[in-house]
Image (cartoon, rainbow, N blue to C red; front, top):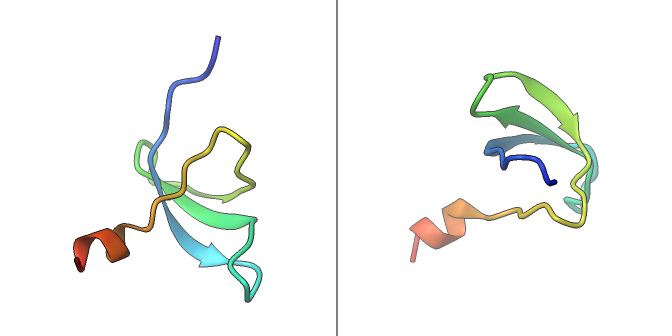
Length: 52
């Protein structure tokens, strides 16, 4: 079975073009980790949606 979803905020980039990996602060723990998104990850750009 799959893992439960997690929410996090991208707080840092390692490449100028915005490709992974990302530094992500996780909402459930408050910790920041290096994140390599897999094929089932969803990255949403909330700022673009909110400015509509």
